[in-house]
Image 1 (cartoon, rainbow, N blue to C red):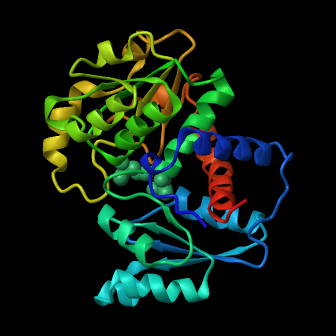
Image 2 (spheres, rainbow, N blue to C red):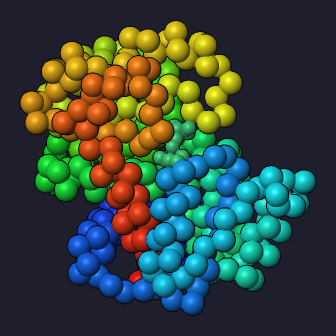
Length: 299
Ligand code: CP
Ligand code: NVA
């Protein structure tokens, strides 16, 4: 059994094998049902549409079932420890997915669980999303290694962090265009650069996007961010619009993990336009997570 906590914890070859499985499952070439008779528990401390539905459908399609738990309705929400919750759930279910605020809670869950724990988003990272992003890019444009991927907006959030991890793991150049106040943590950049990750950080969105094979945006205000007004003011120059997209490669695609805010981080013209792959990206959450679950359970 293996946890899926972060792209930093899993070697490149393993991540590649998960994506291979995901593609084979999507194409119907892999019809294994490693969750047959098994149960996945999902704990949500934050809202979710895609993660919740894609994991539940993934569990069903792999022969198992899922239980959706809102932390609010659990004893966890009244002070039962993460450790006790992990130990108890491990006696009932075969895998645990958790979406929570602090990354430490996810790690504590993994330390005390005797079944695989999957990161369904924390304040620090969103690795399942980025597996689906890499899968989507490669379906549309071929191998991601050596390509240029741009991200424009809040470069200090969970999605940007997992993309930085992915740049090192999958070997793409990653250019972040962001205000100086919302740059990635220096330790994160150092982690990637120590692993030959090619990461560029600039406050000029056009420089980030120049020649990119994909342009990625995310919400300006993530779940749990309390400073929406400040973020809107800082990020106003970092909207992905047609003019910005013109600076990317002419065959560039646009990705966004969703939910999106049209007119804020991206214009409707871009996200609803011909270069947008956001709904394929959302669909690929299902295929990527089926492969993640199969990997966790030792397939
Ligand atoms: N992209 C993503 O994780 O969506 P949800 O918040 O709807 O799960
Ligand atoms: N950065 C966003 C991603 C949502 C899927 C958030 O954390 O709210």
